[in-house]
Length: 443
Image (cartoon, helix red, strand yellow):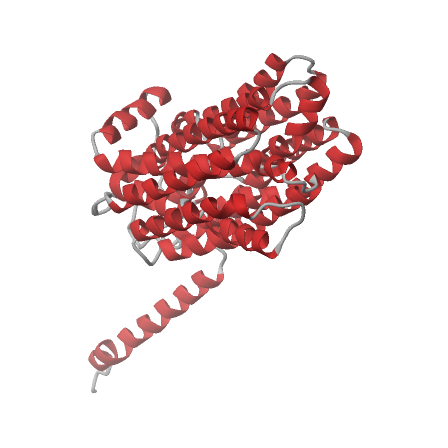
């Protein structure tokens, strides 16, 4: 009797196994990976936290009119907020490793709600510094861009740049949602109701964080999205030691590499030319030229629309192109747009202003995905914490610009010098980005 088993084993079984593997892979692709719901929760959470980001630019003039505080004094509260927003970031990243995402993020949202809500009771400028500066600064800093870097670093291998862009755009989406509403409420009902709305938005997403956010893919029996078989990507790493010590150790390590200083310097200028200058002073500057505050706020919200598209596109490009070249292009184009802004502002939104808004929106935080990618390339598993320090420099730059531009406005009666200085600094940031070398990613 002739045995067919050798023939079956050589010719048929390999093809059967191949078909089975193909079917299993197709089934796995059709099943939604848990990383995407986690990213969605992160996106909604960042939108909720972004409610307060719309408040300072709209309430600057109402607070000045009611309390008589100078623009520099009110801007100082914003500067403290921006400064803490950055300086808390690296410690928050280490604390997320220690305590977990849910505890840190939910606590941060509560602080934001307290800082915004308690302002309705204030009658002195030091209380503004406490609420807007300290409470909101610590809260927003605890879930800033390091939150984005932590989620993408733990949950994604493939599409990491794209998801970084999407989550970064959440802040702009929040601005888009809240800014026109905040401006209209402030015009119709005064500044206190908008402060309460921002507080309520932060509290509203706390249950979502507690119910659906998870720390690592391994917590639900998965690997990171796109991680190959046998990869440790997405596995829980138990943090040991003091979180503050770890954050400082990462800074000490990074400080010995020139790439860190180039990234930090460029990102400081990024913060000065966005949150510190345009984000804080655009509405007032446009009003100085006769534009109604509601119109100026709507234009600033429009920045948020194009910011979403620009940041997501930047994430997609970061997955495909050298992030250094992207940074050079972003900073150069931003600088040119700031240099021409003083000649564009007027009582109405002329087509040239619309062009500026669209262009600036596309470029607003497009710098984040390539900067996160370079931090991971140079600093490996410590990349999110190092990015926290780089982001701290972003907020230092924003804080200096917020106060500095307010002082320029008080002394000269216009913001023109602030726009010109920021344009020149953006050219310097492009040069810094060009000087960053290449390094093989550590992890």
